[in-house]
Length: 334
Image (tube, rainbow, N blue to C red; front, side):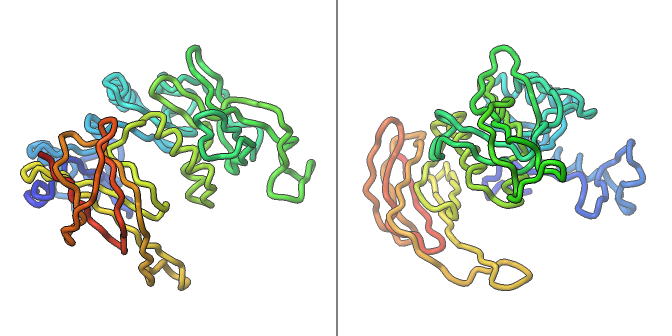
Protein backbone atom coordinates (compact mmCIF):
# COMPACT_ATOMS: atom_id res chain seq x y z
CA UNK A 1 0.00 0.00 0.00
CA UNK A 2 2.90 2.37 0.71
CA UNK A 3 4.04 1.86 -2.89
CA UNK A 4 0.66 3.05 -4.17
CA UNK A 5 0.84 6.15 -1.98
CA UNK A 6 4.36 6.97 -3.17
CA UNK A 7 3.14 6.65 -6.77
CA UNK A 8 0.28 9.11 -6.01
CA UNK A 9 -2.33 6.50 -6.94
CA UNK A 10 -5.83 7.71 -5.97
CA UNK A 11 -7.98 4.96 -7.48
CA UNK A 12 -7.63 1.23 -8.07
CA UNK A 13 -9.91 -1.53 -9.31
CA UNK A 14 -10.21 -4.42 -6.84
CA UNK A 15 -11.22 -7.59 -8.65
CA UNK A 16 -13.60 -10.02 -7.00
CA UNK A 17 -13.29 -12.88 -9.46
CA UNK A 18 -10.23 -14.18 -11.26
CA UNK A 19 -9.91 -15.26 -14.90
CA UNK A 20 -10.20 -18.92 -13.86
CA UNK A 21 -13.66 -18.22 -12.43
CA UNK A 22 -12.79 -18.34 -8.73
CA UNK A 23 -14.47 -15.79 -6.42
CA UNK A 24 -12.28 -14.04 -3.85
CA UNK A 25 -14.87 -13.02 -1.27
CA UNK A 26 -17.38 -14.80 0.97
CA UNK A 27 -20.18 -15.22 -1.53
CA UNK A 28 -23.45 -16.66 -0.24
CA UNK A 29 -25.10 -16.89 -3.65
CA UNK A 30 -22.35 -18.95 -5.34
CA UNK A 31 -20.40 -20.73 -2.57
CA UNK A 32 -19.31 -23.44 -5.01
CA UNK A 33 -17.36 -20.82 -6.97
CA UNK A 34 -15.43 -19.44 -3.99
CA UNK A 35 -11.71 -20.18 -4.23
CA UNK A 36 -11.07 -23.50 -2.49
CA UNK A 37 -8.08 -22.13 -0.53
CA UNK A 38 -9.59 -18.75 0.37
CA UNK A 39 -8.80 -18.18 4.07
CA UNK A 40 -9.93 -14.54 4.29
CA UNK A 41 -12.39 -12.13 2.71
CA UNK A 42 -9.73 -10.80 0.34
CA UNK A 43 -11.86 -8.38 -1.69
CA UNK A 44 -13.35 -6.63 1.34
CA UNK A 45 -9.96 -6.34 3.05
CA UNK A 46 -8.41 -4.77 -0.06
CA UNK A 47 -11.19 -2.19 -0.28
CA UNK A 48 -11.00 -1.37 3.44
CA UNK A 49 -7.22 -0.80 3.33
CA UNK A 50 -7.54 1.34 0.19
CA UNK A 51 -10.09 3.54 1.93
CA UNK A 52 -7.80 3.90 4.96
CA UNK A 53 -5.16 5.39 2.66
CA UNK A 54 -7.73 7.54 0.78
CA UNK A 55 -7.49 5.32 -2.28
CA UNK A 56 -10.87 4.62 -3.83
CA UNK A 57 -11.79 1.41 -5.65
CA UNK A 58 -13.47 2.30 -8.93
CA UNK A 59 -16.35 -0.10 -8.38
CA UNK A 60 -17.60 1.56 -5.19
CA UNK A 61 -17.00 5.27 -5.71
CA UNK A 62 -17.37 7.39 -8.85
CA UNK A 63 -16.71 10.71 -7.13
CA UNK A 64 -13.34 11.42 -8.75
CA UNK A 65 -14.45 10.86 -12.31
CA UNK A 66 -15.93 13.33 -14.81
CA UNK A 67 -17.43 10.83 -17.26
CA UNK A 68 -18.67 7.32 -16.49
CA UNK A 69 -18.88 4.82 -19.37
CA UNK A 70 -21.20 1.80 -19.36
CA UNK A 71 -20.10 -0.23 -22.35
CA UNK A 72 -22.55 -2.46 -24.23
CA UNK A 73 -23.85 -5.08 -21.74
CA UNK A 74 -23.53 -3.78 -18.16
CA UNK A 75 -26.79 -4.59 -16.40
CA UNK A 76 -27.87 -2.31 -13.57
CA UNK A 77 -29.43 -3.43 -10.30
CA UNK A 78 -30.98 -1.06 -7.77
CA UNK A 79 -27.76 -0.47 -5.81
CA UNK A 80 -25.71 0.40 -8.89
CA UNK A 81 -28.54 2.53 -10.28
CA UNK A 82 -28.60 4.61 -7.09
CA UNK A 83 -24.83 5.18 -7.29
CA UNK A 84 -25.01 6.20 -10.94
CA UNK A 85 -27.94 8.52 -10.29
CA UNK A 86 -26.03 10.18 -7.44
CA UNK A 87 -22.93 10.51 -9.65
CA UNK A 88 -24.97 12.20 -12.38
CA UNK A 89 -26.85 14.43 -9.92
CA UNK A 90 -23.50 15.68 -8.59
CA UNK A 91 -22.43 16.85 -12.05
CA UNK A 92 -21.01 13.68 -13.57
CA UNK A 93 -21.65 12.76 -17.19
CA UNK A 94 -22.62 9.30 -18.46
CA UNK A 95 -22.09 7.46 -21.74
CA UNK A 96 -23.99 4.18 -22.16
CA UNK A 97 -24.41 1.81 -25.09
CA UNK A 98 -26.62 -1.05 -26.26
CA UNK A 99 -27.90 -3.17 -23.33
CA UNK A 100 -26.05 -1.27 -20.63
CA UNK A 101 -28.55 0.20 -18.22
CA UNK A 102 -31.04 -2.66 -18.54
CA UNK A 103 -32.26 -4.31 -15.35
CA UNK A 104 -31.06 -7.87 -14.51
CA UNK A 105 -34.13 -9.32 -16.25
CA UNK A 106 -33.18 -7.36 -19.42
CA UNK A 107 -36.81 -6.32 -19.89
CA UNK A 108 -36.52 -2.56 -19.31
CA UNK A 109 -33.99 0.17 -18.61
CA UNK A 110 -33.23 0.45 -14.90
CA UNK A 111 -31.51 3.80 -15.55
CA UNK A 112 -34.31 6.28 -16.24
CA UNK A 113 -31.75 9.03 -16.84
CA UNK A 114 -30.92 7.46 -20.22
CA UNK A 115 -34.15 8.98 -21.46
CA UNK A 116 -35.25 6.02 -23.58
CA UNK A 117 -37.78 3.22 -23.42
CA UNK A 118 -36.90 -0.27 -24.60
CA UNK A 119 -38.88 -1.61 -27.57
CA UNK A 120 -36.74 -4.66 -28.25
CA UNK A 121 -34.02 -5.93 -30.56
CA UNK A 122 -33.59 -3.75 -33.64
CA UNK A 123 -35.64 -5.20 -36.53
CA UNK A 124 -32.85 -4.61 -39.06
CA UNK A 125 -29.24 -5.79 -39.03
CA UNK A 126 -27.01 -4.31 -40.24
CA UNK A 127 -28.55 -0.83 -40.20
CA UNK A 128 -26.99 2.63 -40.51
CA UNK A 129 -26.22 5.69 -38.37
CA UNK A 130 -26.65 9.13 -39.94
CA UNK A 131 -24.47 11.60 -37.98
CA UNK A 132 -25.58 15.22 -38.12
CA UNK A 133 -24.33 18.39 -36.43
CA UNK A 134 -21.85 18.09 -33.54
CA UNK A 135 -22.15 14.31 -33.40
CA UNK A 136 -20.90 14.14 -36.99
CA UNK A 137 -17.67 16.10 -36.50
CA UNK A 138 -14.90 14.80 -38.83
CA UNK A 139 -17.36 12.39 -40.47
CA UNK A 140 -19.05 12.79 -43.86
CA UNK A 141 -22.82 13.48 -43.60
CA UNK A 142 -23.86 10.09 -44.94
CA UNK A 143 -25.05 6.74 -43.60
CA UNK A 144 -22.44 4.71 -41.73
CA UNK A 145 -23.08 0.99 -41.46
CA UNK A 146 -23.39 -0.57 -37.99
CA UNK A 147 -22.56 -4.22 -38.46
CA UNK A 148 -23.78 -5.54 -35.09
CA UNK A 149 -27.47 -5.56 -34.20
CA UNK A 150 -28.55 -2.82 -31.81
CA UNK A 151 -31.70 -2.11 -29.84
CA UNK A 152 -34.84 -0.31 -30.91
CA UNK A 153 -35.73 2.38 -28.37
CA UNK A 154 -38.29 5.17 -28.04
CA UNK A 155 -37.48 8.66 -26.83
CA UNK A 156 -38.84 9.79 -23.50
CA UNK A 157 -40.04 13.42 -23.17
CA UNK A 158 -37.13 15.85 -23.02
CA UNK A 159 -34.66 13.51 -24.73
CA UNK A 160 -32.87 14.79 -27.85
CA UNK A 161 -32.03 12.59 -30.82
CA UNK A 162 -28.43 13.20 -31.93
CA UNK A 163 -28.40 10.69 -34.78
CA UNK A 164 -31.15 8.53 -36.29
CA UNK A 165 -30.92 4.96 -37.53
CA UNK A 166 -31.47 4.62 -41.27
CA UNK A 167 -32.85 1.22 -42.24
CA UNK A 168 -31.77 -1.01 -45.17
CA UNK A 169 -34.13 -2.23 -47.89
CA UNK A 170 -34.37 -5.61 -46.14
CA UNK A 171 -32.43 -7.99 -43.91
CA UNK A 172 -29.93 -10.13 -45.80
CA UNK A 173 -31.37 -13.67 -45.60
CA UNK A 174 -31.92 -16.59 -47.93
CA UNK A 175 -35.32 -15.07 -48.76
CA UNK A 176 -33.95 -11.62 -49.57
CA UNK A 177 -30.34 -11.95 -50.65
CA UNK A 178 -27.71 -9.32 -51.30
CA UNK A 179 -24.27 -10.40 -52.51
CA UNK A 180 -22.44 -7.88 -50.35
CA UNK A 181 -21.99 -8.08 -46.58
CA UNK A 182 -25.09 -5.99 -45.98
CA UNK A 183 -28.12 -4.66 -47.84
CA UNK A 184 -27.87 -1.02 -48.99
CA UNK A 185 -29.62 1.78 -47.17
CA UNK A 186 -33.24 2.47 -48.11
CA UNK A 187 -32.78 6.12 -47.13
CA UNK A 188 -35.60 5.89 -44.56
CA UNK A 189 -35.27 6.81 -40.89
CA UNK A 190 -36.29 3.94 -38.61
CA UNK A 191 -35.60 4.63 -34.91
CA UNK A 192 -33.20 6.58 -32.66
CA UNK A 193 -29.51 5.68 -32.86
CA UNK A 194 -27.80 8.14 -30.51
CA UNK A 195 -29.73 10.22 -27.98
CA UNK A 196 -28.96 12.78 -25.30
CA UNK A 197 -30.71 13.50 -22.02
CA UNK A 198 -28.80 16.38 -20.41
CA UNK A 199 -25.35 15.09 -19.46
CA UNK A 200 -26.24 11.54 -20.44
CA UNK A 201 -25.70 10.16 -23.97
CA UNK A 202 -26.84 6.72 -25.10
CA UNK A 203 -25.82 4.64 -28.16
CA UNK A 204 -28.39 2.06 -29.30
CA UNK A 205 -25.61 -0.05 -30.90
CA UNK A 206 -22.79 -2.05 -29.24
CA UNK A 207 -20.14 0.33 -30.54
CA UNK A 208 -17.40 -0.90 -28.19
CA UNK A 209 -17.82 -4.55 -29.18
CA UNK A 210 -18.02 -3.49 -32.81
CA UNK A 211 -14.75 -1.56 -32.60
CA UNK A 212 -13.10 -4.49 -30.85
CA UNK A 213 -14.11 -6.83 -33.67
CA UNK A 214 -13.15 -4.83 -36.77
CA UNK A 215 -12.42 -1.23 -35.73
CA UNK A 216 -14.70 0.91 -37.93
CA UNK A 217 -13.24 4.40 -37.71
CA UNK A 218 -16.69 5.98 -37.49
CA UNK A 219 -17.48 4.12 -34.25
CA UNK A 220 -14.40 5.62 -32.62
CA UNK A 221 -15.09 9.09 -34.04
CA UNK A 222 -18.70 9.03 -32.85
CA UNK A 223 -17.49 8.17 -29.35
CA UNK A 224 -14.83 10.91 -29.43
CA UNK A 225 -17.46 13.44 -30.55
CA UNK A 226 -19.75 12.42 -27.70
CA UNK A 227 -16.86 12.68 -25.23
CA UNK A 228 -16.08 16.18 -26.48
CA UNK A 229 -19.73 17.20 -26.09
CA UNK A 230 -19.78 16.04 -22.47
CA UNK A 231 -16.21 17.10 -21.63
CA UNK A 232 -15.45 20.19 -23.76
CA UNK A 233 -12.56 21.39 -21.59
CA UNK A 234 -10.40 18.34 -20.76
CA UNK A 235 -7.18 18.42 -18.78
CA UNK A 236 -5.06 17.66 -21.86
CA UNK A 237 -5.57 18.09 -25.59
CA UNK A 238 -2.99 16.68 -27.99
CA UNK A 239 -2.96 16.85 -31.78
CA UNK A 240 -1.17 13.67 -32.72
CA UNK A 241 -1.67 10.22 -34.26
CA UNK A 242 -4.08 7.76 -32.68
CA UNK A 243 -1.08 5.67 -31.56
CA UNK A 244 -0.05 8.41 -29.10
CA UNK A 245 -0.84 7.80 -25.41
CA UNK A 246 -0.76 10.68 -22.92
CA UNK A 247 -0.94 10.66 -19.11
CA UNK A 248 -0.49 13.38 -16.49
CA UNK A 249 1.27 12.86 -13.16
CA UNK A 250 0.72 15.56 -10.54
CA UNK A 251 3.61 16.21 -8.14
CA UNK A 252 2.03 18.69 -5.73
CA UNK A 253 5.03 18.99 -3.41
CA UNK A 254 7.24 20.01 -6.35
CA UNK A 255 4.60 22.39 -7.76
CA UNK A 256 4.55 20.69 -11.14
CA UNK A 257 2.84 18.34 -13.55
CA UNK A 258 4.75 15.77 -15.58
CA UNK A 259 3.22 14.73 -18.89
CA UNK A 260 4.21 11.33 -20.26
CA UNK A 261 3.78 10.88 -24.03
CA UNK A 262 4.21 7.39 -25.42
CA UNK A 263 4.21 6.53 -29.13
CA UNK A 264 5.11 2.95 -30.00
CA UNK A 265 3.34 1.10 -32.81
CA UNK A 266 2.87 -2.66 -32.31
CA UNK A 267 2.82 -4.76 -35.48
CA UNK A 268 1.79 -8.36 -36.20
CA UNK A 269 5.13 -9.52 -37.67
CA UNK A 270 4.61 -13.10 -36.46
CA UNK A 271 1.61 -15.36 -36.10
CA UNK A 272 1.34 -15.39 -32.30
CA UNK A 273 1.52 -11.79 -31.02
CA UNK A 274 2.36 -8.18 -31.80
CA UNK A 275 5.90 -6.84 -31.50
CA UNK A 276 7.58 -3.43 -31.23
CA UNK A 277 10.42 -3.47 -33.73
CA UNK A 278 10.75 0.09 -35.02
CA UNK A 279 10.63 3.36 -33.09
CA UNK A 280 9.17 5.96 -35.45
CA UNK A 281 9.62 9.57 -34.29
CA UNK A 282 6.88 12.19 -34.65
CA UNK A 283 7.45 15.93 -34.73
CA UNK A 284 5.88 19.27 -33.77
CA UNK A 285 2.97 18.04 -31.64
CA UNK A 286 0.61 20.81 -30.43
CA UNK A 287 -0.40 20.35 -26.77
CA UNK A 288 -2.90 22.26 -24.67
CA UNK A 289 -3.44 21.80 -20.93
CA UNK A 290 -6.04 23.11 -18.50
CA UNK A 291 -3.68 24.55 -15.92
CA UNK A 292 -4.97 24.82 -12.34
CA UNK A 293 -2.41 27.55 -11.50
CA UNK A 294 -0.21 30.15 -13.15
CA UNK A 295 2.50 28.42 -15.17
CA UNK A 296 6.13 29.35 -14.56
CA UNK A 297 7.82 27.19 -17.19
CA UNK A 298 7.37 24.31 -19.62
CA UNK A 299 10.29 22.04 -20.49
CA UNK A 300 11.06 18.75 -22.21
CA UNK A 301 12.72 16.46 -19.67
CA UNK A 302 15.16 14.98 -18.96
CA UNK A 303 16.70 17.04 -21.76
CA UNK A 304 15.93 20.24 -19.78
CA UNK A 305 14.89 21.99 -23.01
CA UNK A 306 12.66 25.00 -22.34
CA UNK A 307 9.54 25.22 -24.52
CA UNK A 308 7.78 28.43 -25.54
CA UNK A 309 4.20 28.54 -24.23
CA UNK A 310 1.18 30.84 -24.33
CA UNK A 311 -1.78 31.17 -21.98
CA UNK A 312 -5.18 31.48 -23.63
CA UNK A 313 -8.71 31.10 -22.23
CA UNK A 314 -7.52 29.36 -19.09
CA UNK A 315 -5.31 26.92 -21.01
CA UNK A 316 -1.58 26.71 -21.65
CA UNK A 317 -0.53 25.91 -25.21
CA UNK A 318 2.85 24.79 -26.52
CA UNK A 319 4.42 22.65 -29.24
CA UNK A 320 6.57 19.63 -28.41
CA UNK A 321 9.31 19.39 -31.07
CA UNK A 322 9.74 15.60 -31.07
CA UNK A 323 8.64 12.32 -29.52
CA UNK A 324 10.86 9.31 -30.14
CA UNK A 325 9.03 6.52 -28.38
CA UNK A 326 8.68 8.26 -25.01
CA UNK A 327 8.95 11.88 -23.94
CA UNK A 328 8.26 13.70 -20.68
CA UNK A 329 7.20 17.32 -20.34
CA UNK A 330 7.50 19.25 -17.07
CA UNK A 331 4.91 21.96 -16.44
CA UNK A 332 6.07 23.96 -13.42
CA UNK A 333 3.66 26.26 -11.54
CA UNK A 334 4.38 29.48 -9.71
